Image 1 (tube, one colour):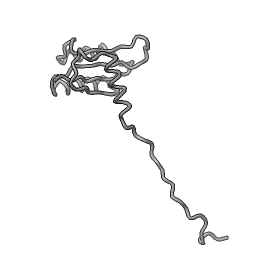
Image 2 (tube, rainbow, N blue to C red):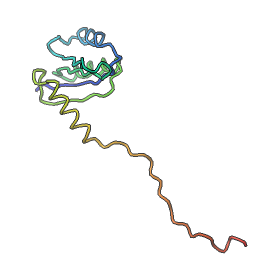
Image 3 (spheres, rainbow, N blue to C red):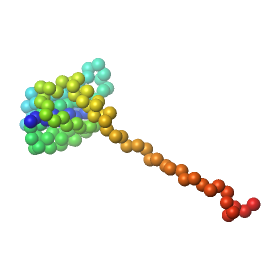
Image 4 (cartoon, rainbow, N blue to C red):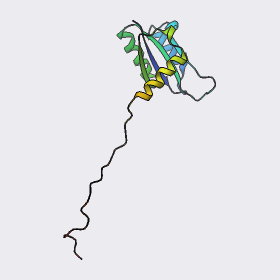
Length: 121
C-alpha cells in the first residue's frame, strides 16, 4: 500500500530547489505536491511525497533534512490523489494535539522544619 510523507518547511526555504532535488532523485512530478499559501507569504509550506518503499522513504527524508525540514509526518495507506491540503492539514493538526510536549522542569519543594535548636539566639 502507498504511504505519504509530509514535510513542513519554513517559508524562507526555496521550494523550487526542493522540487528539483526530488525530481533528480527519481520522484515524478505527479508523485509529490507542494502546498503554498498565497494569502500568508510568511507562513510555512507543506510538501507531500508518495512513498512506495523504504528506499524511497530514506531518499525523501534525506532531501527533506538537507532542505531544513521543520517537521515530518508519515500517513499510511494514503495515495497522493487523497492528499488534499485540507485533509493533510486536519491530520497534522490532530497529530499535533495528540503529541505530549515536554514540560518544563518541575521543582518540588520539601517541607522544612523551620527554626530548630541549631539556631542560636
